[in-house]
Image (cartoon, rainbow, N blue to C red):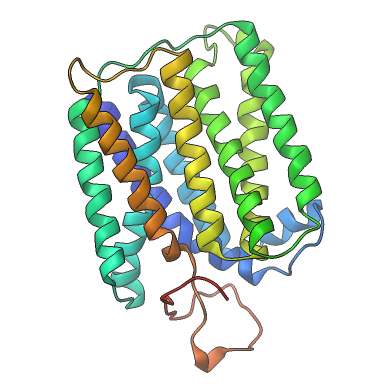
Length: 298
């Protein structure tokens, strides 16, 4: 349990720093009006986006250990609480100021994670039937098709919807990691969860990049956080046998709600604007000093 807790917290730190770098990289790339491979190529040339992606990869590797050893509702809440780390990093690196709502969000996250650590019992099953594995792949395909359709739309509503789809994709990867059959190389290649994991991760990144270009990063991040956290947590409890320790169900529920609620409040820390002195200047891949606005809407 201590290993799972440590790796989940380390993953949250990686995801927290990754959020700001990816927002910078996506905003610097020319906006895409449809899903094209060129978008991923342009993002691959963006230094900030690559830094963010590298941190996400490290966070994902750490979360694999946590997902295989801790209940999904705990791991999802902890790793998605990385925005509390983002808030602290913004104060330290960018000179941002915390407002009362931000402090309340951080307090809610810390209190929620404390309750979750107290309440978490042993994880449930690490296996599921073939229908469950096929359903993961089918969900991923549906997410990709909806992403293609929404890529032609703009505005905060489209950004929020794409944020939800990114959360669905990342949520599927968490579930796929949990149930993946790793008994042999052949079993991995024959498991639909393998392809759900890969397509869900790539599709989640693509949907999130498109969401960042279309509207408020706050809306996209908050919507994605809710989808990525609640969906897998519910599936873990109902289908995989995750549970709290006896008598601590109330603490798990309250802690989960507080951690996710605090994360949504802190979602504005994914939104970074260039300072007035460089407004209108061509975007570069070199992070410049930035300010974090009180609201994320532009």
